[in-house]
Length: 376
Image (cartoon, rainbow, N blue to C red):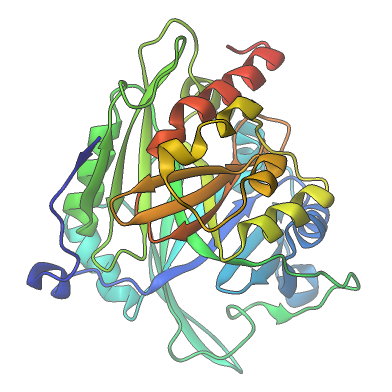
């Protein structure tokens, strides 16, 4: 692992040309948004807060907005077979289309990034209703994924203009999910550095960490990864690409089934991973499993931790340490039938890293799943 000497408090970052307040929302295109919304309410504890569709004057699609703490997840489905969203789902399956970024000035964010080489997706536009106005603008990034800049300082509605407040008859119970810690993108062979450079030059991000195929490999497969972060550290995007191995890597499997580059997983933060994962398991969410021997020398590897080993072992939660503390993490199996998008649940106890010490055990677990699918 190579770590850069980035100090997030330097003058350069304080003068960031693209200040970002955090993740505004993540929009997924799905085959059936109504059913997917109920899944995320029940299994992940999200609350339905807003809706747009034919009843609100939107004739070609339906969108459900779910919220838990600072996380907003938008699920959108097309209503016509010849709709671009239908084409997206046919090609990719259910997956992330929009990584939306909360900014103070959407037009300026668009101008700053497009002037540095970003490919436009949607020019700045103001949307308004009785709750105020929101300005949005979008640029393209890897695959068919886009970044939408959202300026909402003059708005107090449930989500965006065009959406109405909506509650579900199902009484969802939150499970302690707090905010988006990071989002990971998978890109094709030899494309990682291209997209890292995009984030550095076009969006002013900094290279935070590099993992090569010696860091992320097993006896059979390998990948390479670099992590970029914006100035205040609120937005972190690891970018993965395949590396040569004896068999097909998880990145290659993703690219085959997603039919191109896209978001591999979303890492969601919690303050109590034991509670969160217990709830997820009880609600039927499946996780990757590592052998129980992983825990035999855990304390020798990571040192003293506050948690008891037994509940971690029972729930299959992984632990890793860096110079600033430790973290606990676990990864779901894909949340749709294609082996593409999944979630990571992470609790940070000071650690700023991404669990390098768990890579081998994690990727061996992924390989076991690939082998069951016949894709290794």
